[in-house]
Length: 39
Length: 172
Image (cartoon, rainbow over all chains, first blue to last red; front, side, top):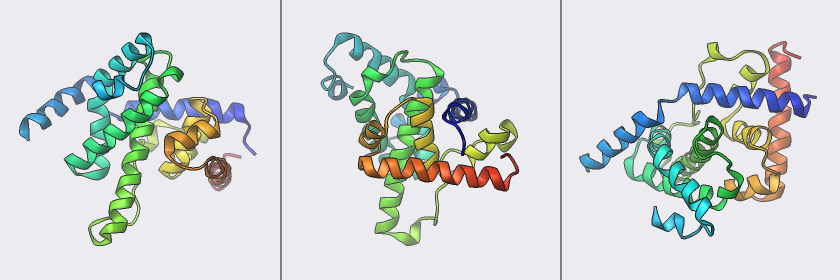
């Protein structure tokens, strides 16, 4: 099986990769406000 | 935001929550909208996610950091997929069979991390919440609205599936 230490390290790296695949939160705030204005 | 602040006792935690809310609400909406493709559903899901975040605010040390971003994104993705599945049950013809959730570029990760990225969103969320964010199965159960027994079962199944993927990929 995979040890907890390996899981912890891989989970941290995966979280970093997920964050990097997402847009900058600052840009999303602008988009969200734009969506609200469109309503 | 007032409704969430009412759920939090200390001023320090309220201030922490406010920073999370102002920093990540747009990103959370973006994640929810990508899964649900519906503005109202995405807003509902962001609201449910913020309730869970307010309930767990004491567990968050730094309100604006990569770890907190990962946490809020994991929670909102989970809520969005739950709603997607509930909508699918109501009107199956409008929805795809399976939903992939957040996609990670395969070229960005290698080895065990790449295998982890291939897990279903539910398994990936359990692994992230337990092994990166350090939540117990009991705490995960509360956040994902499942029983503790189910959280334990999901954790075990996620690890078994990960082991199987690793074997197939020749990692282990």
